Amino acid sequence: LADDAAALRHLGYSAEEIAHAMKAQLPAGGESAARAHFQTWLAEKADSDGGRAKMAASWDLPVSETADKDGHDALQWANLSQPDGWCNISHYLAVGCISAREMFSRASEHKNFTGVAHRLMWREFHRLNAIHWHRRIAWLQGPGRVERPWTTDPVIVAAWKQGKTGVPYIDACMRELHETGWLAYKGRKTAGFFLVFDLGVDWRVGAFHYEDELLDYDFAMNYGNWVTVAKVDKPRNWGESEVNPEEKHDEMRWKLSAEKTNDPTGAYIRKWVPELRSVEDRFIHTPWGMKEEDMATCGCTIGKDYPASIVGALDLNISNPSSDAHPFAAEREEAKGEAIA
Image (tube, rainbow, N blue to C red; front, top):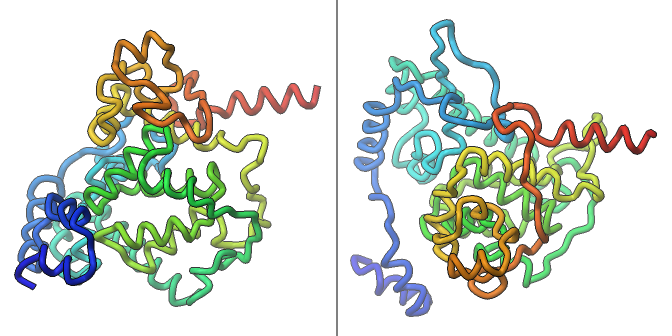
């Protein structure tokens, strides 16, 4: 087992898969590495300001006004949308290299202790949730016993898994996941929502894939988050509506518009989707908007060098990108008014 490549061959992996695995940049393993990683976070970020000030748009995150009287926000919601997440230590927690109690104790004297405690509490909530629902948390209908038509179309599933849906942010997320075994909170939730509500795929396909790919895989966290994303976590009879088929992609437009606002040059997309690296900023989030001359200029032909969008062209234009309000709220109200008239 000292020879990783030999071990992988023994387990039946192909030469191509082994070569890919051996090139991967993986974090050091073990208790010492976990403690050193957390110590670095404590030294560099446990007392930092960070937070919403760094975000142009926060409408797709569970953001609330949590700053203290001095303006410091220990919860730093914006970190949930950053590539390295909050502490980026979940892979160590998942395999027991560091404990939640140790993190809680070591962070207790720092300004962002509340944020650390908050993230750990969510971890514990998912454990209690899994204990309560037991195997129902992995049922297609979920704990909420929600019936909905699903597909498992292998072509659609493969496009999502491989990051070849033609929707740049989604593809960047899925490729980062495959290359690193990591994906920040926002990426996991957005890619999951896209699979379920924009592609109509059985949410468990996504849960199985995350189980295969994530270094921080944890049954309770993975399935708890997936049933929530798929909206099968509870009966939908409390005034919460399902996604309206006539507005099928509106929520995704909302989520992708936030990403476009926060990363207008598409730095994250360019990092993980090399086919789009030469595309102009104005098209990096919406390559379907390019004309023939635009594609010729950047050397990327949609449908050839990069897939055409599997869900068609999505309009990500918003009227007030600096607002925390839902970007399409006014548009929806106007549509309702026209319907009534």
